Amino acid sequence: MQHAIVINVAEKADYKLLADLGRRAFEEAFGRFNDPGDLQTYLDLAFHPETIRSQLQNPLYTFLLATWDEEPVGYAKLFRGECPEPVRVKSCIQLERIYALQSYVGRKVGKSLMEHCVEIAKAEHFERIWLTVWQQNEVAITFYKKWHFEVVGTKKFTIGKEINDDYIMSLDVNKIQ
Image 1 (spheres, rainbow, N blue to C red):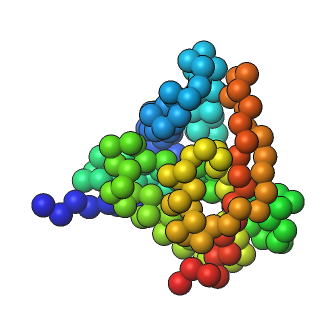
Image 2 (image 1 turned 60 degrees about the horizontal axis):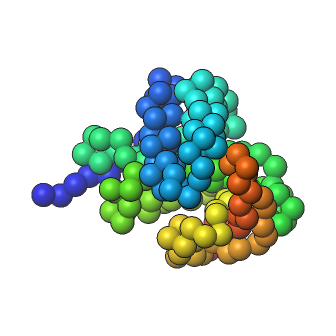
């Protein structure tokens, strides 16, 4: 049976779904690496439904929702903000999040989301897409490198008492056909 991955721009009404999906995906991927209390505090803030609702209403954000046979399985979040110093271009867009539920990792959900992110970046004439990724997240780093993202710097990412080193990675969208 052929499964269908469908990517759509999320609607404002999807805020609770995106909050739940993001919370689940983050907890599945990183929960075992963090103090439970710190993790809970982070999840409650980053994936609070009102936080997501507010971002969906802001034109600087775009959320892409991935479904697998109509079941929500992942999403990407783009943010049109300032380019960080290591990216060094005039126009860039941040891939703030790209998540798939663990049971769908390896099933091309991330690839489909990334294709749509690149299409949006090109359509809006951005030179680069940039993101941050935990330096120990080898699966994600390998995925990004396949897309021709390059490490251009580092930054700190804090969850409670835990301070992690993240890479800043950048992609020249003109390198993607």
